[in-house]
Image 1 (cartoon, helix red, strand yellow):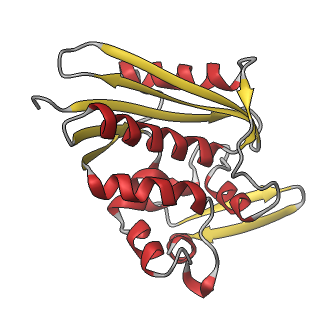
Image 2 (image 1 turned 60 degrees about the vertical axis):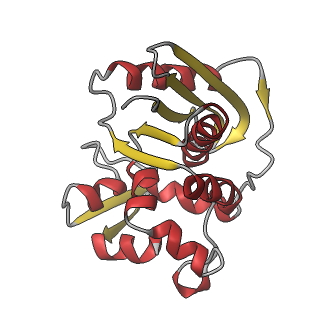
Amino acid sequence: MKNELNIYTDGSCLNNPGKGGWGIVVIKPNGSIEEYSQGYKLTTNSRMEMMAMYMALKYAEKHGKGKVSIHSDSNFIIQAFTQNWLEGWVKKGWKKQKNEPVANADIWKKIYPLYKKLEVNLNKVKAHSGIEHNEQVDELARAAAMSNELIDDIGYIPNGEQEQTSIFEQKQENKITLENVLSNGVPSVKIKSGTKTITITKQQLEDFLK
């Protein structure tokens, strides 16, 4: 679309939690491309995905014409908007069901007003599928996490409420993440931790996110 920015976003964390980074690749209406990234000393994958979204929105606010298409391979980020989780959290004072605090609310609170201000078109892209700019931004985020210019993630609280997001980041041997339970119709996922195994159903995950 004429005068519309296209921005690809991604986040990376080397040891979740651990060193991390976000990256965005901006494609301007004239076809020119810009890259931005930043690495952090200690953070999580979810926070880096969210920071990438926030920085994309900040760029669009400053340099765009009010319209932006954002491309992300994170189911969690996309569904927070499309499934109205974010609106629900705002209405509940950044609380989920059972009055539990929303994880990483410090970043969501930055994202929300920008999202409401702009005309945002969200696009879910498949990770590691050869999509040029998605592969580009993935490499950018990873490089940021491994750089020597890491800064503190001020809002990250080790072993605090932000740790709740790790449930979305654990992977099974078959590479199905908990996010895929919602998007691919998988009825449940088993997670192993040492000698313990827990099963999480789609309904339980939906209840957790509300």
